[in-house]
Figure 1 (cartoon, rainbow, N blue to C red):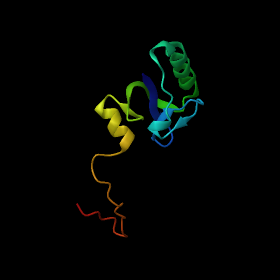
Figure 2: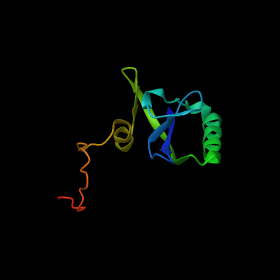
Figure 3: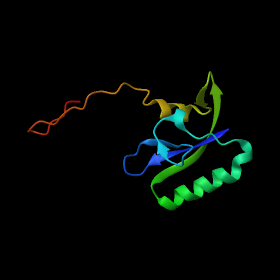
Amino acid sequence: MEILTGNELISGATVYLDPRGQWVEELQEARVFAAEEGEARDAAIAATKATLRIISLETEKVSVVDGLLVPERLRERIRATGPTAPVLDRQHLYEDGHVSI
Protein backbone atom coordinates (compact mmCIF):
# COMPACT_ATOMS: atom_id res chain seq x y z
CA MET A 1 0.00 0.00 0.00
CA GLU A 2 1.25 3.46 -0.89
CA ILE A 3 0.30 7.09 -0.41
CA LEU A 4 1.45 10.22 -2.22
CA THR A 5 3.16 12.92 -0.21
CA GLY A 6 5.05 16.11 -0.87
CA ASN A 7 5.46 19.67 0.29
CA GLU A 8 3.21 22.54 -0.64
CA LEU A 9 5.30 25.04 -2.59
CA ILE A 10 4.08 28.22 -0.90
CA SER A 11 3.92 27.14 2.75
CA GLY A 12 6.35 24.22 2.76
CA ALA A 13 3.78 22.15 4.66
CA THR A 14 3.88 18.37 4.43
CA VAL A 15 0.81 17.30 2.47
CA TYR A 16 -0.88 14.06 1.38
CA LEU A 17 -3.19 13.36 -1.55
CA ASP A 18 -6.67 12.46 -0.30
CA PRO A 19 -9.33 10.32 -2.06
CA ARG A 20 -10.96 13.45 -3.59
CA GLY A 21 -7.68 14.47 -5.26
CA GLN A 22 -7.08 17.30 -2.79
CA TRP A 23 -3.85 17.87 -0.88
CA VAL A 24 -4.36 17.75 2.90
CA GLU A 25 -2.05 18.04 5.91
CA GLU A 26 -3.38 15.01 7.83
CA LEU A 27 -1.76 11.66 7.10
CA GLN A 28 -4.89 9.79 8.18
CA GLU A 29 -6.86 11.48 5.38
CA ALA A 30 -4.48 10.21 2.67
CA ARG A 31 -5.68 8.07 -0.20
CA VAL A 32 -4.15 4.61 -0.04
CA PHE A 33 -3.19 3.10 -3.39
CA ALA A 34 -3.23 -0.69 -3.51
CA ALA A 35 -0.57 -2.50 -5.55
CA GLU A 36 -3.01 -2.99 -8.45
CA GLU A 37 -3.77 0.77 -8.61
CA GLY A 38 -0.45 1.71 -10.21
CA GLU A 39 -2.09 3.43 -13.17
CA ALA A 40 -4.27 5.58 -10.91
CA ARG A 41 -1.26 6.45 -8.75
CA ASP A 42 0.82 7.38 -11.80
CA ALA A 43 -2.03 9.52 -13.19
CA ALA A 44 -2.27 11.36 -9.85
CA ILE A 45 1.50 11.96 -9.90
CA ALA A 46 1.33 13.34 -13.46
CA ALA A 47 -1.63 15.60 -12.62
CA THR A 48 0.16 16.90 -9.53
CA LYS A 49 3.38 17.64 -11.41
CA ALA A 50 1.39 19.63 -13.96
CA THR A 51 0.14 22.02 -11.27
CA LEU A 52 3.64 22.95 -10.03
CA ARG A 53 2.04 23.42 -6.59
CA ILE A 54 3.53 20.38 -4.81
CA ILE A 55 7.28 19.83 -4.62
CA SER A 56 9.32 16.84 -3.45
CA LEU A 57 6.52 14.54 -4.56
CA GLU A 58 7.08 10.96 -3.39
CA THR A 59 5.27 7.69 -2.94
CA GLU A 60 5.46 6.27 0.58
CA LYS A 61 4.74 2.74 1.68
CA VAL A 62 2.31 2.53 4.58
CA SER A 63 0.74 -0.10 6.79
CA VAL A 64 -2.49 -0.04 8.72
CA VAL A 65 -1.89 -0.56 12.44
CA ASP A 66 -4.86 -0.47 14.80
CA GLY A 67 -6.88 1.27 12.09
CA LEU A 68 -4.30 4.02 11.49
CA LEU A 69 -1.96 4.63 8.59
CA VAL A 70 1.68 4.23 9.64
CA PRO A 71 4.48 5.08 7.21
CA GLU A 72 7.15 2.39 6.95
CA ARG A 73 10.08 4.87 6.82
CA LEU A 74 11.11 6.71 9.96
CA ARG A 75 11.63 9.90 7.95
CA GLU A 76 7.99 9.92 6.88
CA ARG A 77 6.76 9.16 10.40
CA ILE A 78 8.68 12.23 11.59
CA ARG A 79 7.27 14.38 8.76
CA ALA A 80 3.75 13.23 9.68
CA THR A 81 4.03 13.89 13.42
CA GLY A 82 6.18 16.98 13.51
CA PRO A 83 9.63 17.88 14.82
CA THR A 84 11.52 15.56 17.15
CA ALA A 85 12.98 18.52 19.04
CA PRO A 86 10.90 20.83 21.22
CA VAL A 87 9.36 23.79 19.44
CA LEU A 88 10.42 26.95 21.24
CA ASP A 89 8.66 30.29 21.20
CA ARG A 90 10.03 32.72 18.67
CA GLN A 91 12.64 35.06 20.10
CA HIS A 92 11.76 38.57 18.97
CA LEU A 93 14.42 41.01 17.92
CA TYR A 94 14.53 44.20 19.92
CA GLU A 95 15.50 47.62 18.66
CA ASP A 96 19.22 46.81 18.70
CA GLY A 97 18.68 43.65 16.64
CA HIS A 98 20.56 41.52 19.18
CA VAL A 99 19.68 37.87 19.59
CA SER A 100 21.11 36.01 22.55
CA ILE A 101 22.71 32.68 21.79
